[in-house]
Image (cartoon, rainbow, N blue to C red; front, top):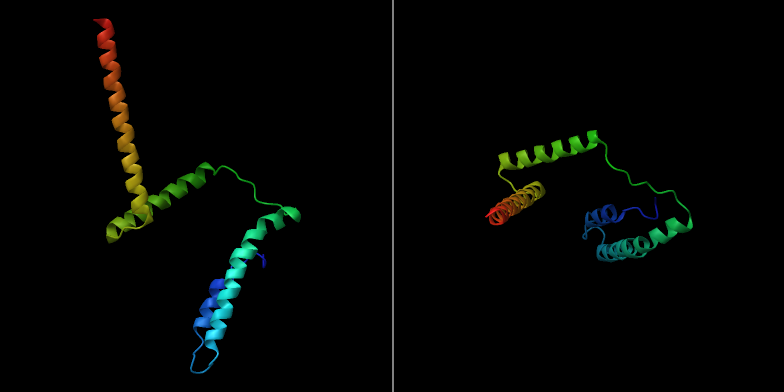
Length: 127
């Protein structure tokens, strides 16, 4: 956990709180903290997967969500979309709902077009 942990945000926030008037070497602490954050993100982040394989760490198995989990997830999505609509703010749920509604319109148009084409073909074959 400590090898792959995300300690950078806390360290960076703490170094920002240092008053440069009280600690004259605050820029040095800032530079060192950024270097450590880059090291942990890039070097440790890149090497964590091979390390997990080498150490044979048991990983979580992918599974399908249960019906209850899917219902609650959809309920929360719709609740958040409703709150965004009430507040008049547009966030992730607004974009998702717009995308889903556009996809449904496209599917409906394709279904209507295929129904029209199939009825025209049946009329031609019967005449």
